[in-house]
Length: 209
Image 1: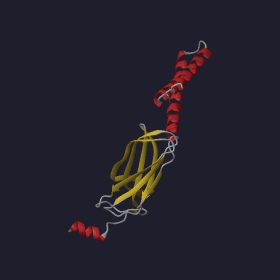
Image 2: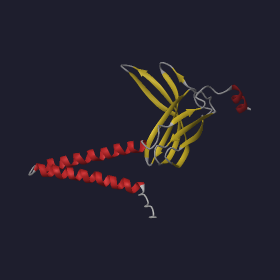
Image 3: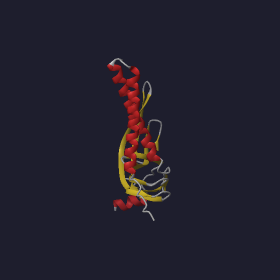
Image 4: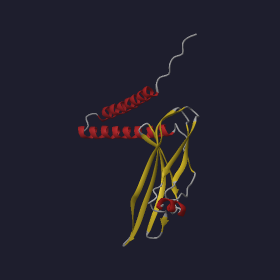
C-alpha cells in the first residue's frame, strides 16, 4: 500500500491563497498599465493605489467572514439575569465548530454604564463607564468539526456598585459582553443586558458584622 500523503497545514494554504489573490491583482494592474498606453504617470499611480486599496480591503473583509464561518453562532445563556449587588453573574457560552478551528481566547466583560441626558436645544446623551470587570473564560481552545464546547463563566458584581435604574434624565445600565477571538481577530461579540438589584438585607448585615 502506498503511504498516505500528509495534508498541507492550514497556514500554508492561507499563504498560497493570498499569493494567488495578489497575483490576480498584479495582472489587473498590468492590464491597467497596458490599456492606458502613454497616459499621465500621476493617473497611473492613482489607479494602481486604488486597486491595491480595494484588494487589501477585500482581503480583510473576506478573511473575517472566513473565520466566522468556522464557528456556529455562539449561544450565551445567563443563569441569573437579575443578580444583586455583591453576587456573581453566572453564565455559560456554547460553541460549536463547523470546521476545525483554534479559538485563541474567550473573554467575559461586565460593564456598568451611567447615562445622563441633558436637554437644551437638543437632547444629548453622555455615557460614562462607572465600573468594568473582565474574566478570561478559555484560552487556546481547539475544536474538531462538529465538536461542541460548553464554557462556564462567573463575574462578581461589586457590592458598592449601583443598581440598575432608568428615568427620563439618567440611567444606570449593566451589560455582560462575551468576546470570542479566532486568531487575532474578534470573531463574535455576544451581549446580554442585566437588571442588577439592590444588595440583599442579609448580606448587608453580614458585611457590617
